[in-house]
Image (cartoon, rainbow, N blue to C red; front, side, top):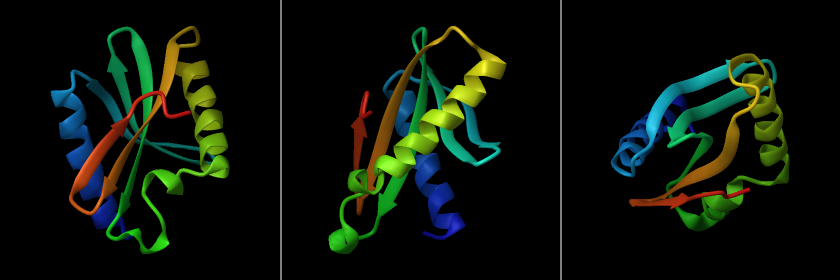
Length: 110
């Protein structure tokens, strides 16, 4: 996915999450080894959100693209982020899947 398309998907996901009551804390957090798309708060919980887009199902769904390797990377990045920002936070990992025009929020995805 190209960068402009990815950023547009992230902007749509952020707007959607705000309508669901999330507070967007940071976008595109770059850390050694990768990037966290969105860091949010849902009440007292810090939520790390991965946004995945697929224009078609030819290569699988957007949710399926968040594979074991990607989940492990996100867990490691989240641990690094929390160590600096909020070591004792309650944490959750969500995925916003954009499959064509359909957007789905998967709370506590992993």
